[in-house]
Image (cartoon, rainbow, N blue to C red; front, side, top):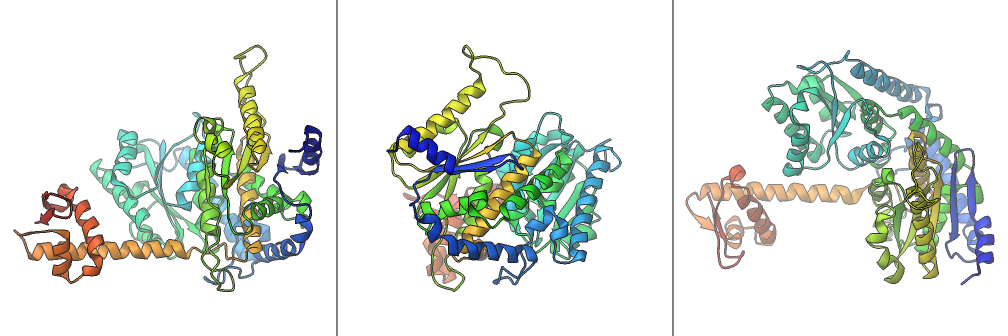
Length: 530
């Protein structure tokens, strides 16, 4: 174990200070070898060159033949054409104008004086980013109260609607889906429309779409005279869409500083665009991910932000990293099974949750702490002589960092001055570029998601089986069958397990499907019929 003096010297050498953006990255508690940076110089130069291509508008998502342009969202002047830059600027101006009109009561609900709530319907990147930002920046003084449908769980949606209650007449709903064909979002839209109908309200007079131009949702919104629509572009992936209309419209309606987020991201882009590892925090972060996981994702990334407002950042980063980096094949088509697993909580809650294992258990992770220097806007009370609650929070962060390092557990620490709109934009941009650089270091496409599409296809097949099961039972009304008998009757013996699960679900919801269930000695002998 190095001495305190040696650690101090390493800290001074391994602190990336970015005073222009008020962010620093300490990687002194990462145990990389002495020749690591020289060894990785060539691969990192290749990653920098690729990132330049990304920002210039090259086709860097070959599977989908698409550009990747989330960097242009915060600086439209970087867009590869003036026309595209104008689209981005016009969309931003349109969102600001729309939110201002809603807040002023110029755009009103059907049977109320003004909109007071916003219900956001989306899934994945269309929900995780808006939820993270809402939690990070929201206050009791917000102009509208946010709610979210982020799943196709009926009970979850009922709970949200119950919380909205009579306020539904004052609720604006934003439906977000690039393709317009995302089933979870479609289902949430239909459930919301039904709730408005039950309240004797016209859903179309409370609905806004964020979607691709010409998508099914776009056409539906036009045909049903929704209030308005805002565009999504195919060169912005869901996991990098927070600074597009996907995240900015809900934030603007809530009353948050969307220009501040964009400005913060733009400032961080300038810092992380530099082709110098030692002064580029995203490059250092990508290199440390490579070191910790031996270029194979061998260790998990544990995110520990010591700030309640950043509690949802780990969920946001789960998608950003795991959907971007979790790939079976590399860019050459070879099997590589890449990825970095991400999980996290918040400090100091984590110290009463899983830090015990982090310190004394299996060493299969590295930590990224996020330190926020500012405690609160006003003066803090003393909970002990000369000590505030914020002092304790800082002490717990430093104590955890030290305790982990003493047991050979590696960590990095990102430090920001405070949590505001600019900070959120900076953090998003910092990790976005780290993902892009790391992906090239391990030779994968960070911008497609074939595994997600495979899951959607499998879900569709399950629903087809359900349709077949109900058809079989309908033709045999008055009779009852076990799951095996249904599979035999359909000639789907290879689908018996799926049929078993389908019947168990249908039987648990008799009000929806009217299935009669006769319990057997075991679940395999339980019979179902109509």
